[in-house]
Length: 116
Length: 114
Image 1 (tube, one colour):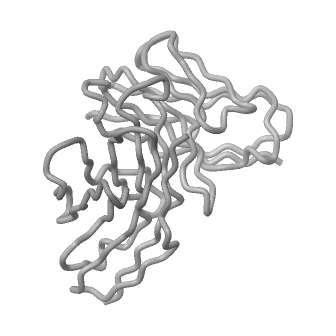
Image 2: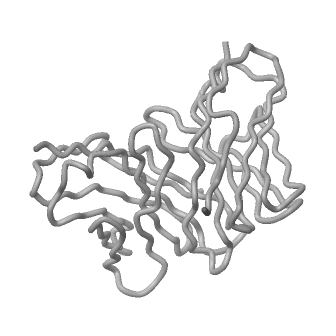
Image 3: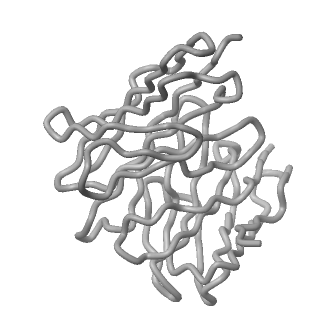
């Protein structure tokens, strides 16, 4: 079984400061890893993904994420937060093959609030 | 415009009255999926489809049915809705490609079962 944990329900940060939203995962195999963002009353939007290669992945809106295989983590980061980054963030994992290839598992979500 | 559409966007119904939520995508994607979103639980996958006539259970399939007769459509059927199916539902699609393709999500359907 695969699972994703986002240990913080909420993250608060001041505008201009760096932000980190944490994600750890558990799978039996090598995963694809994703981050999605949900703005109020909207569907989810793709931010970035890790498939292979460089452990530091860059995505939309200045976000990046670091894949750490030994710690099974995929933390989302941004060097300088904006008030407009305030939203609900989801980490997700998908296996690369096998009978559960189509299953996508999401974390419970982290509410990011950026204060002016 | 590439998009995933869902209908209806809002639905209030009563226990036991069969309903269908439609989902359609115009990107020729092979993969489609349904999720429900509940506070504190994130998104949980209900069913997914790898292609026409190929469907499989996600993590919370009980009480739901799906069909994939055409590539663009993936309706979600609740044959006898119950109050515990009150939730926000999202449909999503992606290409299969290498498997690492991101999903495109619909705007969501807020369902209330009384």
